Each structure stands twice: as C-alpha cells, then as structure tokens.
Amino acid sequence: MLEIKALNQFYGDSHTLWDIDLEVPEGTCTCVMGRNGVGKTTLVKSVMGLLGIRSGSVRVNGIDISRHRAENRARLGLGYVPQGRDIFPGLTVQENLQIGLHARKDKVRDIPERVFELFPVLKEMLYRRGGDLSGGQQQQLAIGRALALDPKVLILDEPTEGIQPNIVNEIGDIIIRLNREENLTVLIVEQKLAFARRVASHFCLIEKGRVKSSGDMGVLSDDLIQKHLAV
Ligand SMILES: Nc1ncnc2c1ncn2[C@@H]1O[C@H](COP(=O)(O)OP(=O)(O)OP(=O)(O)O)[C@@H](O)[C@H]1O
Ligand SMILES: [Mg+2]
Image (tube, rainbow, N blue to C red):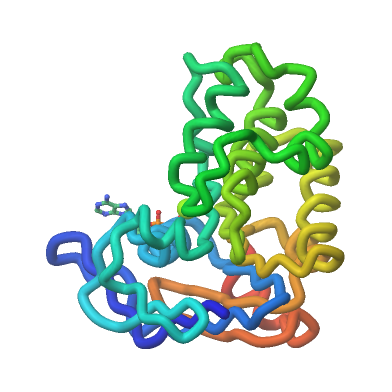
C-alpha cells in the first residue's frame, strides 16, 4: 500500500533521515516510534510531500509519488493529521472541515456524514470557532478533516500529544475502528507505548534518523524499548 525505500532527507547540510525503509501493507496499522527529535515528523512530512527528499522513493500502490506535489498526494489517497493539529483557530468547525474538500477529485463538496458519526461533538459545535475547542476536540476536528477527503491511508502524527486520558481512549477507539472494521490503512507516529500497543499491528523504531527495528508489534521487546524508547 505505502512503501518507503532508501529515503534520505536533509535540512540544509543536516542529514536528518538515513536510508529509511518502511512498508505499510494494506489494512495494517503501523506505528512509527522513537524519542523526541529522531525524525518522526520529518519522515511523515516527507511522505506527504511537505518536505523535499534527497534520494529514495515513496510509493502508493506501486506508484512512485516522491516527486508529486503535496496536493496530488492527498488526491491519491494520503490523509494527514499533523502534529499539533494545525486547525484554523479563527474559522468555525464547519469551515475547518470544508477547507480541505477542494482536494477531493470526485467533486464532493459536502462534509461526509460519516465524520459526524465518528465525532458527534463536531456536529454539536459546527459553528464554534476552532480556537475555542478543547485540545481533544481540536484533535477530533483534525482527524475529521483528514477523513472528509476519504483517504486510503491515514497518517497521524502524535494524535494523543497533550490530550486528556479519556479523549486519548476515544481517539484510540476511533483509530481501531477505522483500521480493523473499515480496513483503512494507518501510519501513526506515537510515543506512548501502551497506546501504540493497543492500536498498532506493526511498529518501526527510529533512532537518530535511522530505522533501528521494525516488524510485528509482538516483536517489540522490552529490551528494544529500554534501548530506544525509555527516557
Ligand atoms: N525545519 C527544520 N530545519 C532544520 N532542522 C529541523 C527542522 N525541523 C526539524 N529539524 C530537526 O530535525 C530533527 C528531527 O526533527 P523531527 O521534528 O522530525 O523529530 P520528531 O521525531 O518528530 O520529534 P518530536 O517527537 O519532538 O515531535 C531534529 O533534530 C530537529 O531539530
Ligand atoms: Mg514530531
């Protein structure tokens, strides 16, 4: 489904990602893990086309998209929920949801009802300003906005960061439902081990811009966690 091969990324002279290989097969949920600053966000932004890469490839269903513009990647089915959510604080919930719809190639311009089914709170708060929502509600809005484009792969960057525990659980439930019941392929960046183990079937552990280990979640040993995740 999504395949990253030998990807290298630089910020100026600074070599940030080194020969990253990562495969996200259809229907799986893969969790990118690693401590602060190891390059997780740089990796997902590279996949989305928000950062240029030096070498390597990103393929979606076999099509090399590594030279495609970000809008085209969204049209090809990559949905993105950025770290920090990036909603528009001055726009209403409705406007935040509508804003990405022009990227749909099927010309659907109404917010799909499914978004409100998954996140009823967004319907209740349709005319409230994004900036007036709680952190958890903003995260739901950011996920809803990505889902409004009906993606084939949903990429989420630390969706539980700074969010109260009950909403973290709710977001976990939604990701599990989308992945296991609706067969949406998911790539998630997550540092919380319990959450990652709950939602993801596969993991990819990064340290200093390199993949240190990857595979089935069941293979993520205490030893690996101690070495690459524990602070
Ligand atoms: N725009 C930028 N220009 C230069 N260096 C950057 C830029 N953005 C990030 N970096 C550096 O690249 C490295 C990887 O950053 P990145 O944000 O990808 O890490 P991360 O794993 O997502 O961290 P976190 O867990 O804190 O979100 C860090 O050393 C960071 O300082
Ligand atoms: Mg990050």
